[in-house]
Length: 126
Image 1 (cartoon, rainbow, N blue to C red):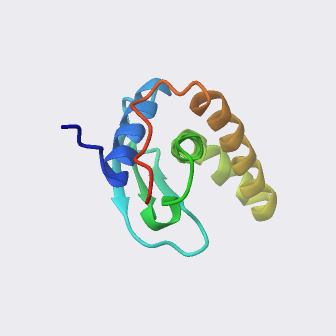
Image 2: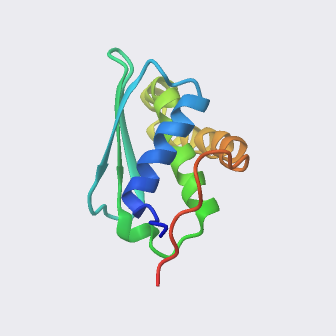
Image 3: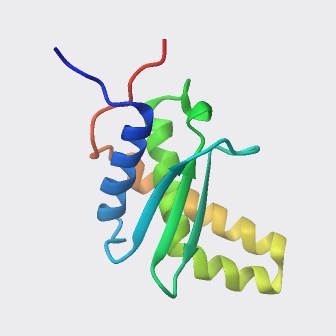
């Protein structure tokens, strides 16, 4: 008998695996699950203490492909490394700073997630 991982377990596993691959080993990254407004995931980071938290809204992932889920995980992890850059850019121009960080996180996520080397695909929603 085979038991599929829950979506929360899969998100946690992908987060751990991709964090390792992205060189974020010195960071203490916690994973939380909660409803979020207008987004599937949110990241907070404190680069002074190497602490970060990624919150996922599991309901937002129920009908997404495994490839998309991997991309979101890698995207949120990229925000951790880019946090200081985004904060600095936002001091000069808040809108531009946020856009710069989002674009960089998206590009990094494509490189990381498309490799697809972490874990097995997420369970299919029925």
